[in-house]
Length: 141
Image 1: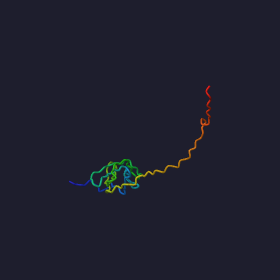
Image 2: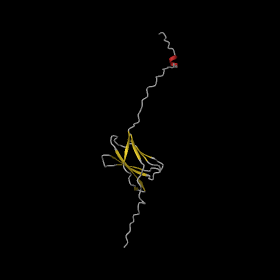
Image 3: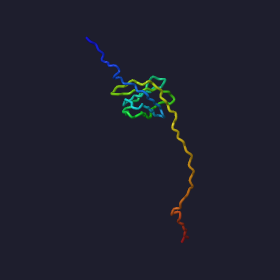
Image 4: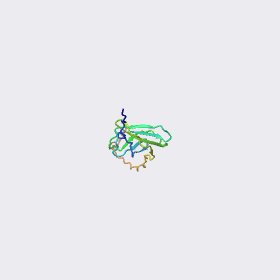
């Protein structure tokens, strides 16, 4: 009887994504990926600092040249600090997760500046044909 191990080292191990940053601007989550990343699908996991429960979002069909993942209308409270981690999916297998890193919140809202009213232009009325007609009252007959 011979025994052997069928596991071959870490050859098949999918590495965790590295050099990933993310920030929340208004209600949009923007995840920046490094150039020439190896995964087409990513799983973004976010949790509040005070909780162990994650919200997960799967980004699919991310191209090799795509450097950002934009998730609009992401419902996060700006008054809470969040931690995030990301993992890649390749051939139906999920990679190891990256280390948790803080999710940055961009408080610089887009300010709408109201410009002062423009100077009122001189009102010039052009006389129309009807204005030029002179109404003549005839005496009654």
